[in-house]
Length: 141
Image (cartoon, rainbow, N blue to C red; front, side, top):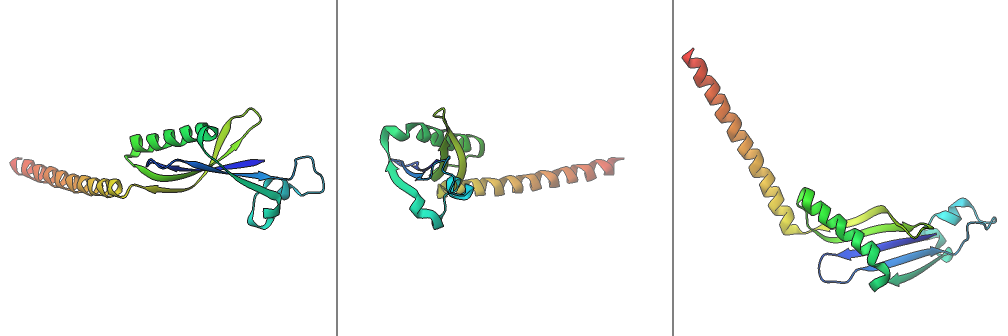
């Protein structure tokens, strides 16, 4: 089994992937299921680690970019850093299995926070105006 951890940056910094490969094969019967399929800090002797970059990580990088664009489009968040975990199946398809870390662009977050506060303030003002209109119209009856 291989686990690919993509470190993606919105800046011009090139993304990299740390690949963790289990040395244990699926059909080796003297290993437990945990030793065959899980990667943990207690079993580092059963794992090979290497770094990939460039063309070999292009598909994972494209998925990270799509995710960043989606978050920006839907929520208005701009991502500074994003870490994604992928596995690859026998058909050479990468599957996103985890998002262990991300950071948002701070200025964008502060702007969204101010916009949210202003929206709440505007809703309160509108509600107060509606109450005044309701009380004014009841005075005419």
